[in-house]
Length: 448
Ligand SMILES: NC(=O)c1ccc[n+]([C@@H]2O[C@H](COP(=O)([O-])OP(=O)(O)OC[C@H]3O[C@@H](n4cnc5c(N)ncnc54)[C@H](O)[C@@H]3O)[C@@H](O)[C@H]2O)c1
Image 1 (cartoon, rainbow, N blue to C red):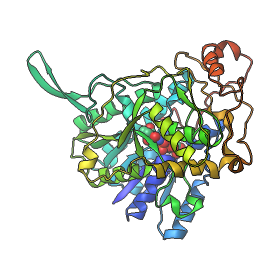
Image 2 (cartoon, protein in one colour):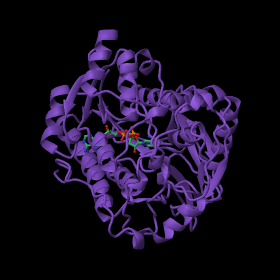
Image 3 (cartoon, rainbow, N blue to C red):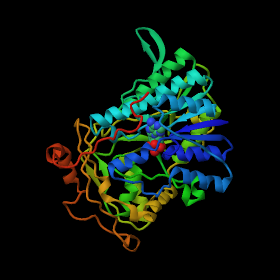
Image 4 (cartoon, rainbow, N blue to C red):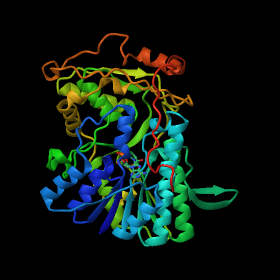
C-alpha cells in the first residue's frame, strides 16, 4: 500500500514509517523538523542521540535496501501539501504532524495560538487537499484519549447512544479536553467529521493513549535508527521521566495525589494499530473513531511499578508528591472502552517488568546526557503567562553504575516538593527579570 506518514521525523512517526516500510508498504515521510526546533527553543534534548533524518533514512536503506521518500515541508503550507499529495498519490495518509505537548500549549498566549494554528490549519489543509486531489485517500488522524477528559461514566469509542425526552440517537461522545493542545485535537475531530459528512471523505480518528517504549524491531536494528526518548517537563512523558529519576537517585515526582488515570500503550502497538487502520479503511463518508490504548494506569501506580522494577536492578527509589501544575481531577472514575482495534487483530504488548527494565536501561545507557534541571514543572495551568526559566544544567551523577543506591539530596534543590509547590504559586512574580521563552516565528506556521 502507498502510505504517507506526516510527522515522520517524530517519535511515533519515525517508528511507524520504519514498521510500514519493513512490512512492504511504499512509504513517504513529510516533516519540517519543528520538533527539533522546539528542543532548541526549550533548551532540552531527547535522552537518546537521534540522528538527522536524512542520515537515518540512509541507514535504513543500507540495512534493508528499502527507500522511504522524504518530502521536507510544512503541512500548514497548502501549496506544499497539495503538491505532495499529487506527487506521491498515497492511498492512506497518517497524520502525526502536530504540536503534541499539553504543557507547551499552556506556556502562554503565543504558544496556545501557535499550537492551535499549527494543528488546525495543518489538518484543514489536509482535508482540502484530499478533497481536491485524492478524494479516495483514507485519512488516519492521530487524536488523543485526552479529548474525552475524565467523565464520571464509561468512555465509549467516539460515539454515545443518548436517550432524551423519549427519543434516541447516536451522537459524538462529549469532549472535556484539559489543555489548549487537547482542545486542538477536539477541533480537528469536528473538522474531520464535518468533511466526511459534507464531502464523503473517509477518515479514522485514532484517540491514542500515552505511548511508552523506544524500541521496535526496526529501530533496534541499528544505533543509527534510534528513536526519541523525551523526559523533560514539556515534551517528556511520565514513564520516561520516572525512569530517568529512578536511575539518578531522584524521587519520582508524582503531580498531586497521583490518582490521574490514563490509557497507555507500547510504541510497538502504535505502529501496528496504524497499519491495521490503513489496511481496513473507513468507508466513504465514514468518520470512524478507535480508542488506541491497551492498558490504563494511574500515575501513582506507574510510579510504584517503576520503583519496584528499578529496585530489582539495584536502584534506591523514593516517590514524592508535587503540587499539581495542571488543572485536572487528581482522583476520578476512569473506564475507557478500547475493543475495536483488538477486534481488527491487535495483539497488545502489555507493560511488563521486562519492558520497564529496558526503559530503565536506556536511561542508564545514556545517563551522561541526562539534564536533571529539565524535569521541574514550571508551567502552571492556572496562569495565562508562564515564564520558563532556564535552570543551570545539572548532569546526572557520574559513576552511577557503581553507586546504584544514590539517595535523593537534601532540601532546597530543584526537585524538592516544597520548592516546586511554592514556585507554582509565585513564579510570575519572581521571574520578571529572567529570559522568557517565546515561540519563534516558525516558517509557514501561520500560512494556510
Ligand atoms: N506520543 C504520545 O504519547 C502521543 C499520545 C497521544 C497522541 N499522540 C499524537 O500522535 C502524534 C505524534 O506524536 P509524537 O509523540 O510522535 O510527536 P512528535 O512531536 O515527536 O512528532 C510530531 C512530528 O510532526 C512534525 N510536525 C509538527 N508540525 C508540523 C508541520 N506543521 N508540518 C510538518 N511537520 C510538522 C514535527 O517536526 C515532528 O517530527 C501527535 O499528533 C500527537 O498528538 C501522541
